Structure formats: C-alpha cells, structure tokens
Length: 567
Picture 1 (cartoon, rainbow, N blue to C red):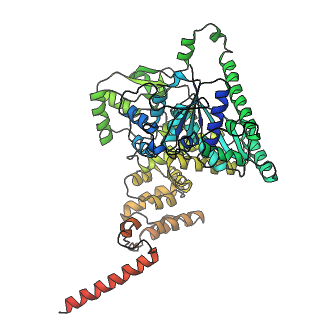
Picture 2: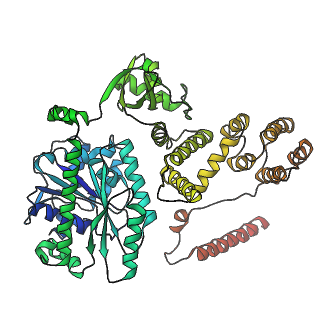
Picture 3: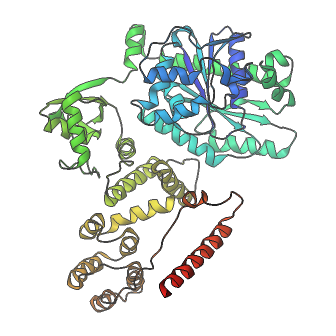
C-alpha cells in the first residue's frame, strides 16, 4: 500500500487536533480504509482518547520505537501497535517522549527518525494520521518530515493569525530543506459556534485572509458538549453520538479529505509521459537522488557571505571526518545556466574534499530559483557558532531581501506591514528579535575597513550600528581619525557623530573634537542570575526581599571586617 501520511498540526493547544485525529481516523475506517494513528505528543491525549487512560503503564510506546531507530535496533513487526474496536490501530505515547525530543537534538538525521520508523509499517496501511504536540519543536518537525500532507485545525473563536503564520513558516522550511513532498490539505475550522456573530465573522475573516493561498475546508466542526465527552469514553463521535451534528461534520470532513486524494491522483496521471511509464519509474521520479558530482563542476554561490577558512577548528574537524568516513551529509546544489552546478549548502565540505585529495562528492541537486537558494543557504549556516557579526549581517540581509522579492505576504496590501512581517520571520527563524535583525542589517552599510574592525572586535556592535548612519566619506574620515587618535568611538560618541551628520555639522574638526574626548569609565556591574541565588533563600522570598537580605548581610560582614581591622 502507498500510505497517505497526514499530520494534524498547530502549535496552539486546545484547537481539537486530537479530537479531529480520532474522528477523522474513525471516518476513514468506516470508509473501508486501513488506518494507523500515531500519538506524537508526550501528553498522550490521543492515547487516552482511544481508551488507555494510564499511558505511562503501557509496555511499549512511540519513544521506545524511535529509540530503537536511533540505536539501529531491530523492530519486530507489529511491535507496540494497539488495536481499537473501531478499526483503528494506535502507536501510543507517554511522558518519556519528552525525553526523546531532547535526545533527537544531537542525533544524526534527527529530523527523519519518525519517518524511518513509519517506513517499517506504512505498507500495512492506507492512511497514517500523526497527532502533533502543541509546539513547533523537534517532534513536530519529525512529524512534518514524515508526512506528505498537513491539516491545520484552528479554533474559530479568535483569529490566530500570528500563530498560524509561524506554523506556515515552519511547514515551508521543512518543505524546502527536508520534505519537498509535503503539502497542506487545508485549514480546518473547529469549535465553531454559529449562534454568535463573532464566530461567524472570525470564520469569514480567516477564509478571506488565507483562502486565497491555502484551502479552507468547507466543513466546519461545530462546538458541542458531546464532542468533549468522547475522550473520557475512549471512543469516537461516531460510536458516542452517531446521529449528532458533530458526527455529520466529521463524516463530511472525511469525504473532503478523500476527495483531495482523488484530485491529486488525477493531476499526477495527467502527464502523457505517465501514461507510458511504469509505477516503479513514476515513484523513482519523485525521489530526490544523491549524485556523485566532480568537484570541478561545483561552483561557489555568488555573494556567499560565509567564509571558508582552512585554518579554523571546524574545518580541521571536517577534514578529519572526511578523511576517516567520507562525506556523511550530501551538499545541496542547483543547476547553472552556464553548465555545472552552483553550491547552495556544503562549501566547507567541498573544501575539505579538496584538501583530502578527493575529486568528487555526494550532492542533492534541486531546481531552485535564486531566492529559494538564498533562503536555504542562510538557514543551513546561520546557527553556526563561529560566524562573524558581518557574515551574519550579510546573510540576514540576503534572506530578508529574498523573502521580500518572493512576496511572502501576498494577502496584505500594506508594503510597510509586509516588510515588518518579513523582518519578524527572519528573526524568528534565526532565533533573534526583529530589532536585532535590523541592527545586523545596518552593519552592511559600514565601509569594508569598519566592517573588519567590527569582526576584529575593535568596535562594539552597538556603536557600529550608529556609525553605519554616517555617509561614506564621513566613515572614511572616521577611519583616519581613529588611526591618528588611536581610539575607537564609544556609544555616546557614535550617537553624537550620527546626530551631527544628520544635521550637516560633521566635518574633520568636529569629528576630531568628539574622538579626542576622554571617555567616561564604564560603570562596573556584577550580575547574578536568579538560579544562582535562589538556592540560598526560602521559596517565599521575592527578588526585592532577596536583595534586602543580601545588603543586610553585606553590611554585617563589612562591620565585622572593620572591627577585626581595628584590633
């Protein structure tokens, strides 16, 4: 069987992910499908909803299966799979799954562990449904990497636009980097109370906002007290209240999901080439292949912001690894118009191959436009520990401009708002604030000489941002003044020069006047974290009470020291 793997995902809790997973599975089973549901949430809500109220007592759960995959242990057919009376099979979860998420962080191929496990069982089912946890952590990424379809349940009592945007960004990132087959089936409006105008307006606004680029299911799951009762009974709505409105809604949703499958099958069969190809060749054509490509055909990415140095520690580690085991992770490249390939990710690996005396390396070739390639290139490098501030600045600027060119928010007409959301997106994916993104991008306005000083830590980032507002000729003059005065500007000096520049008053004399001032000594600060101090105080102590106690103790210590010195 060619199983359809459907993830039900939303990082917001309480949006009926689990309820929808149970009832869609039951609806598919009633339609004659062979269904497996997988509980991907350490809270084990799906496991409890299918009649196992104490999941921590189950002998085998998903964490055990994923652990076996990580340790390359043999899995017995059917191991850990539980059977439900309504024709649904279940891979349960328990609290140990939260520990598995931590284990995945340092694992090889960490994003595909769940997919590799499901590959061992998927030929027994037509549909596999993944109930994701309410977060965008490693378990959810694993589920998206394993799925070929996503359903996004959304509570219709509010407009969760920001949260939905974050999820869509994560799905897009997984599709670009890990799972190009991933498709969004649609947004499912749940807990809809059509008795209120607010609910109707919210549902309408959601359709208007996202309906142009993502399908919003025509089925809406109504708010119902009876639907909330089913988790305690361990059965679906079809067994609990088969003639109710919620059962009718999930029956309709099941038909919509199956209709989407048929439509996609027709699209896949529309090609004339498909009519004369074998099933094996069609399956093979959809796979990404790892190709062995000569190094001479691999060209660097234009304007690649990340330096590759032969003498840094990471290059030495990479070279040792390549000599001992070869290239473990293929590079990513795209075809060049002039022939050969343009490296998107893997510049250091290519250099390590050259140093190791190899003449070819494994590469995944993708048909990417420049903006798609930039985003992948930045995302695969931005979290490296040893990148310099200017490398990071150039990379963030490239990605920000690529996202803007893509028209990432076509549903918005305000350019200002679209740019703001692009900055937020870049910041979220880089793990920094939008203000920090803007500060980094400002560094690209510095002259090469000043950029080198920032990387060499001669100028701190905060004053460097202020200096970036100076005109090019003013920046050149500043470099000369710094050399003559043997001094670098403090934050206050940089701010004053920026203000003078904006007022047209910054020249050689005023700059020399500012730079020749004696800097005020920095105020010495000693900072203790709350965790460091908390162990010495009762839990009831507030931070203010802790501060007062510390001061009193220090005063007592000082008086005691003074008395000791007087003797």
